[in-house]
Length: 72
Image (cartoon, rainbow, N blue to C red; front, side):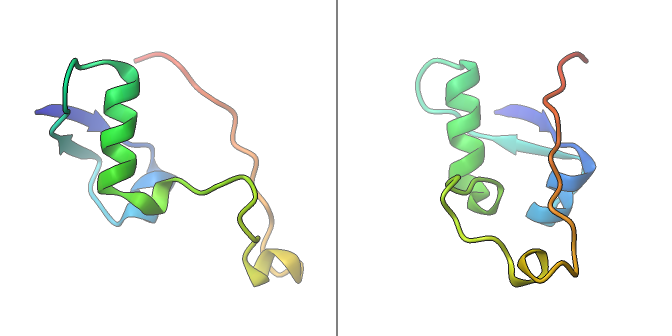
């Protein structure tokens, strides 16, 4: 099992605590962990062509651009 710590906005989307555990098929690589995360929590991954929520389209809610972060 791989332990994964999610940032607050992803925890809110997935409705989970700070940390989740994932079973990874095959070699434990970054790709296999991300694949397992997306399989277990599909709400964390959408196509770039997915329609924006009505609240964003209407201007009621902003569209957030979140920069990638690295580190531990």
